[in-house]
Length: 236
Ligand SMILES: [Zn+2]
Ligand SMILES: [Zn+2]
Image 1 (cartoon, rainbow, N blue to C red):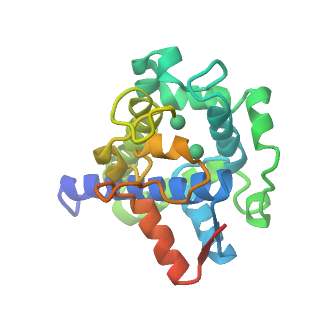
Image 2 (tube, protein in one colour):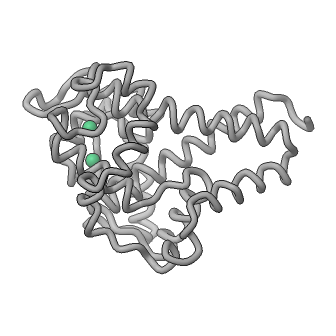
């Protein structure tokens, strides 16, 4: 390997954090809650980034998340630790998501999402995006570095970061709004691009910023504000 292992591990963390940023600002705040609209060119590159690193179908993701909001911590919530048990969501969030994304009752919630031209053509195959992403790493860095970078990203994105939001933040933390579900955790907010301020989010899902206190940091909101300044996004 041309570089020390820690550099590849760090690169894997950066890929996962980048995917988390795109997930919160584009999939979550943009497509699901429609609190921000992005310039079509920026939207294309956000879709490209998610295609290469996650293989997520946007319509499915929106459906599962809207179903979560409709039934938060009640019967019908696809991934509530209060119903299913903390560890089942904290460790198995990915499998719960996959199961929900195949359920027609859950998919109904995504009925208003219209795939863009790029999604209907270039990004049509979710698997192809992941194959291209992995091939890019392999040709750029070699086989073992590819395995370390991709492995770090898969572990963090599928089995750690998103799990903290749906698992930990629905079971532990502090609340700014006691009548709303979920909890906030400042450290989780840092590493999930703001999503850890989850009680704040459930209080007002259509609010593009997830922070309410000066001590709360929402990196996703900082990104959106910079994009607004560059005229690449606007608050809807
Ligand atoms: Zn939630
Ligand atoms: Zn939401």
